Image 1 (cartoon, rainbow, N blue to C red):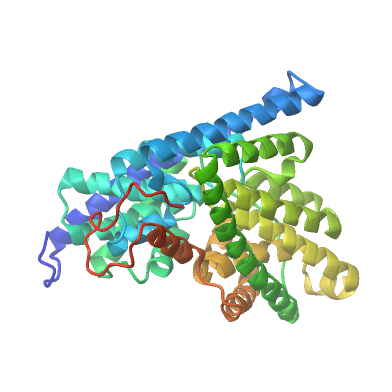
Image 2: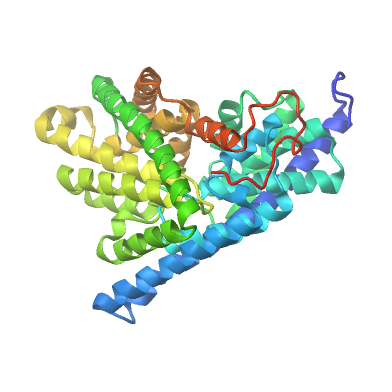
Amino acid sequence: MEPADRPATPLQQASFVAVALFVGALTGVFGGLFHLAIDTIIEWPTWLAGRVEGWRQVAASAAVTTAAAVFAVFITRRFAPEASGSGVPEIEGAIAGIRHVRWERVLPVKFIAGIAAIGSGLVLGREGPTIHMGGSAALAACQMFRMRDVDRKALLAAGAGAGLACAFNAPLSAVLFVIEETRKQFPYTFRNYMGVFAAAITGTAVTQIISGERPDLPLSAGQAALASLPAFAILGIILGAVGVLFNRCILAMLDIAAAWQKRAPYLWPTLVGLLVGILLIVAPRTVTGGERVISQIAVQTPGAGVLLMLAGARLLTAVVSYSIGTPGGIFAPILSLATCIGLAFGVLAQTAFPEALAGMGVTPVSFGIVAMAALFSATVQAPAVGVVLLLELTSAYALVLPMLTACLTASLVAQWLGGRPIYGQMLDRTLARAGRGPAKGSDVGLAADPARATH
């Protein structure tokens, strides 16, 4: 490859993009198989319901989720502690040169333990594992093709972006995610930027070949007149505060789980597994990643009180599920939580001002869709990613202005309340536990002790 102080020749650019295409394809293989396995396994409660009933069904469900949670925690702690949680902070730290990605361990552990945890019904998203696996696949390709360190950093980011593209069938969001979320670490050049494009393309394509094409959330949103923007701004204010609350609850629960781990290493995962297993039978909408929950409540639109109770329950189950330390992300739980709040806001607004909202073409589902982008912006503080991700997921292009409005107010309110990006806080927490501060100028994979547990 070319020296760092010279522009790349066309041949060098082509060779780099070719490697990025390979990274995306490899990520697509892992991502596609990951989604296919989860989509198959997550049907087990239905299978169980056809064979046992009553308290036996509840007991069997609790046993399954507990066993899966403990198994996922065990192999994560035993073989790759850094594979716990989302994986996005690990990727950001690796690009910055302050974390180590042991791809040989992370890939199989993230894949197997992630399927067990998410497939069991825990309130976790698929995007964290696929992002981490994408970065790991990139490092595997770098070793295969003997890429230098500066190229490894760029390909690491490209692989992570491909992982997000796999998770949501959203290649444009993947490119923006690298730009917005890793803006402080990503080595920007035209060639590196094109590498991110290339990995997102092949990652999405290969995933679709394996697990099928799907707009993940095909919701009917209708139109939204300009006069409705103040209502969406108010929704953004509410979700800005909710985003700060969500982040603080996640970090607080991680501290509680760490304290329990010192006293009884597997008691907390056992209790969470029991809780989730019981809820899978008695209140199924309060658990699982939430993609199906979003579709169900958007179609049925329960009352505002029911939606707010569901939001509170999903907030609790999301933070406790994430705290046990299995592989799993927070994007999907954030989106389902936001949908509950947005729909409740829409139902209340429709009750208070039925004629006004009808005249502006706004429905509760419109608020639910916009709420997903706004809460994502408040927690991750990547508003452009939030807007584009929801447009790719829902095809609700008529809601661009409401989304921008809500994301603006949510992001501002979150900052004014002292909120910080959740992944940055997680990375700081990891470094503090490892007894290290941010390192400058380190190479990927050389700066941090991978054996320390992370989230």
